[in-house]
Image (cartoon, rainbow, N blue to C red):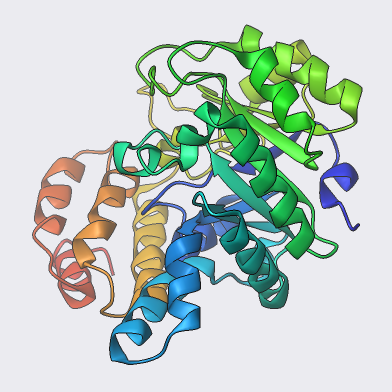
Length: 334
């Protein structure tokens, strides 16, 4: 097996998969700002993907067109991991084979998503309640993954903390890496992450020779290094932190803040990043995805200087790329 996790310099940093955030367009922005050691795709349904690939016809072509962009990546994003969710082991097997064909460096199984529509179908964090199915999914994914390492991203419990029991169960199926988010499904993101529990998972994984990555409330690169050392981790996965700071992984710059709490980037630098993101978004999605999906990122780029709020309000009215660039030009950002 070509287990890239074991080749990374520790502690390494991973960009977490986030729905409608970490598509190829956003990952390209992160590459330009300072890339992490590992990228993840957004998660993709194994059921939807298998259905689309099995059938034919106009409706199926629409499904293929909708799902496949989630699995697009560029060479400068390597190593990159494809993340899947679902509850049918056989579909994980088929999607693992697809990931191999598409050239991914690894495959991850989502056992941590707390969204109700995911959990109720025994997917995501719902698998914490079905430990035997969880192990079978890991085994089937490994069977279809060829030489690619298979990892699991999960939480420390469902309604209550059961870190050691749950992680020990996963270890039985021998994944290459386990990423632990330090909250239960019930806690969502409403309480601080339990890093002491992540530390308990680390002890078990290190003993089993499995790479262990911690996730939850890491506000800076420096804090990530500190938490990794304190808890015996191989790496740190960053989620929401990157959403507010695209320069997070740029050591010596990404975690640096100005006196007013804003990143040390000029307005022109940020606007250029915004323009690039719009271009990447159109390149990836064309007209397939609602342009409004992109607007959640505008505050990242347009904030921290006089007039930024007014410019951002104007940009929120944009309906397409043309509108964005016209508004920027009118405000002398060209």
